[in-house]
Image (cartoon, rainbow, N blue to C red; front, side):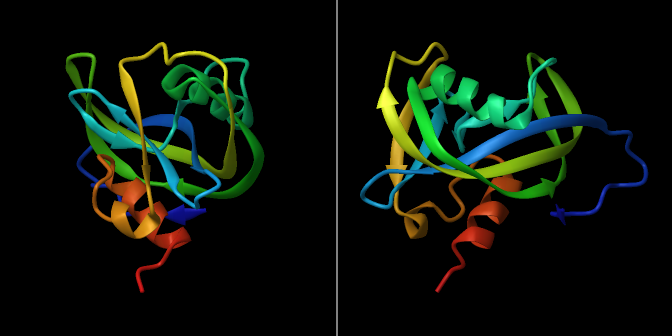
Length: 145
């Protein structure tokens, strides 16, 4: 597990189990979800009850971008601590995030969330992700040259 930062001892954090994927296309570009009005993130999200992190990626890819993904391989677990605004409230989050690497497969539907799909070469994406820990993930997998 890669700890991204240290928790503030004066803050109580909520555990959040999540799963995200670095999904590439045939042009070696990375899929990024634009959450309209919020920012860019990797496809993925919270692991729901009765679901494992692998199943989360499959579900979230359909919901957020309308695509199936293939060749998913587990990469690493990242553990960041941060504050996020969600549904009108601030959450102090202790995220336990499983990261997968995979490939884009078939478009099977339109996204059901208010999102847009974008493609970036890894070096075009540095510093552009809304969640700082995802910028750390990107630089861990694709170190700056």
